[in-house]
Image (cartoon, rainbow, N blue to C red; front, side):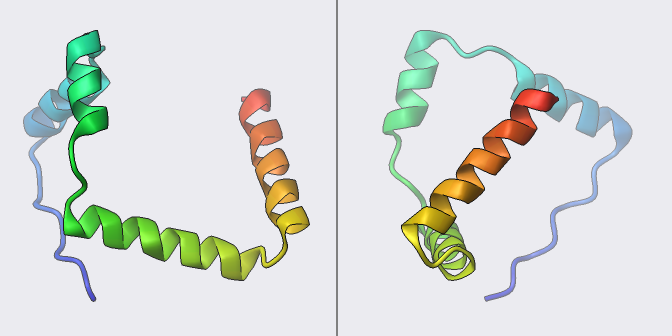
Length: 77
């Protein structure tokens, strides 16, 4: 399944989108987003990511090591 290309945005549209995406959510907005059902595309993306991760790191020890490595990278930022 190929994804459609995202629309081209002007610099003004991109700035508006970034402002909207980076704003803090109220507790009520956060709760609504957490409880919202997934779209078919979101579920497919998630399933594909899990399959890739399990192929890339086939054992529990490899998955744990990869997760620890990523967390160490994040802490160094």
